[in-house]
Structures are given as C-alpha cells and as structure tokens.
Amino acid sequence: MKKTHIIAIVIIAVAIASMFTMLNNSSTYSDFEDAKDANPEESVHIAGTLVREKAMEYRPELDPNKFTFYMADQKGNQQKVVLLKSKPQDFERSQQVVIIGKMKGDHFEAKDVLMKCPSKYNDGKNTVANP
Image 1 (tube, helix red, strand yellow):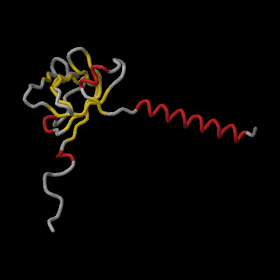
Image 2 (cartoon, helix red, strand yellow):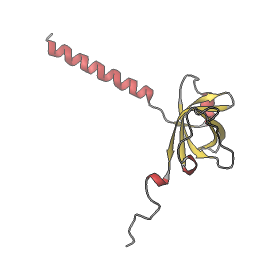
Image 3 (tube, one colour):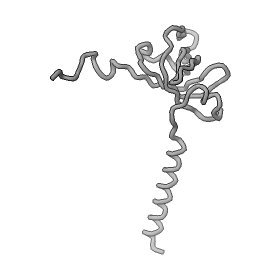
Image 4 (cartoon, one colour):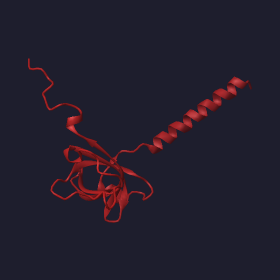
C-alpha cells in the first residue's frame, strides 16, 4: 500500500471520528421537566423567558459569581435559576433567555446564559419602508 493511501485513510478516519464527536456534543432545547430527568453529568440548554414578577438577587459584595433569578421555560414551567457568573448587563431587558447547565436539587444551576435583547439588533425604529 502506498503512503498516500495510508494518509488518506487516516484523514478519513479522523474526519469520521470528529463528526461523531460533534453529533454527541450537539444538544437541543429542553425544558425543566426534561432537565430533572436528564443525566446529572450532562448539561442541557433551556430556552424561556424571565419571570419579572419574582425577585432577582445579585450581591457582588458577598459573591460576585452568583446571580439568582426565576425563569419560565417554553412549556410555562417556572424554576429558580442560579447563574454561576456575574449578572449580565441589561439582563432585565432580555426578551428570551437560554440557560446552559443542570438541575441541582430544587434549582437549576447555570454555567452560562445567552440573551436575546431587541436593542442589540435594532434601535426600536421600523426598518421596513412603507409602500
């Protein structure tokens, strides 16, 4: 067998292995019920909205890497969320929130949060011209 054939086989094997790795790491959005039933070692992504009626707690003088809030998932289930980071800027203005983490007892422990804020994408003006 030629060296070029061996190199080609190795490259194909690496490509196939990387595809399987990416497929295993990809995740879909879950809800809080699915997160309770999920493997405790796996992180899940939960999309939802901020529950503005309930209090948010961020005390940087005590723990700058702990922010607590309540969120409702796509099915309307509300859950206490503990974000293990500082409070994101303009968090209250977000329309949709995606949290990444896992359930820990009576709360969801998030290691990261993604926010969809309308102010990031437009200035509030109608960008569509009237005919």
